[in-house]
Amino acid sequence: MPCLAGEPSDIFLKVLAFFEKQGVIDATSDWQRCRAVRNMAAHDYATHYAEIAEHFNLLHELADVLFHAARRLIAWSDEQLGIAPASQDFSPEFERIFV
Image 1 (cartoon, rainbow, N blue to C red):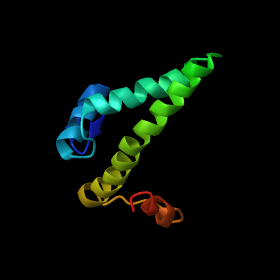
Image 2 (image 1 turned 45 degrees about the vertical axis):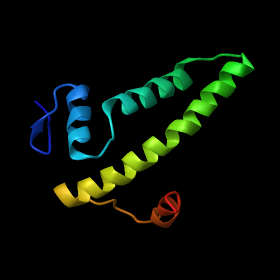
Image 3 (image 1 turned 60 degrees about the vertical axis):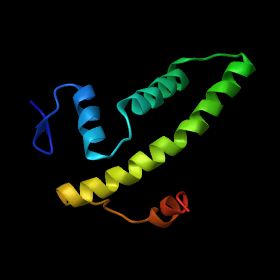
Image 4 (image 1 turned 120 degrees about the vertical axis):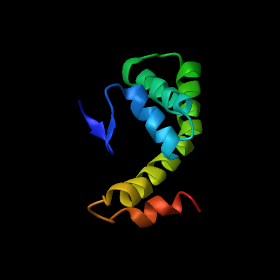
């Protein structure tokens, strides 16, 4: 069975619960919402402009959730596993998101 930091990760909900407990994500429900909106973008080919606008507004709304989760995952990986990004090429641009 695959492991994540020594914890069993047989289903993705356990992974989400683990990262919620570790403070990487705020809530599993936020992540599931992000995933649902992403799936809409990948699989829905609507031509109704109001629906398209609503979808992009949702993506914009959820971007903050994803940016903060990414930042906390980078910090958690470094602190807990000693793993850091191989390159710092985009670090200044990434950090400017939070200013």
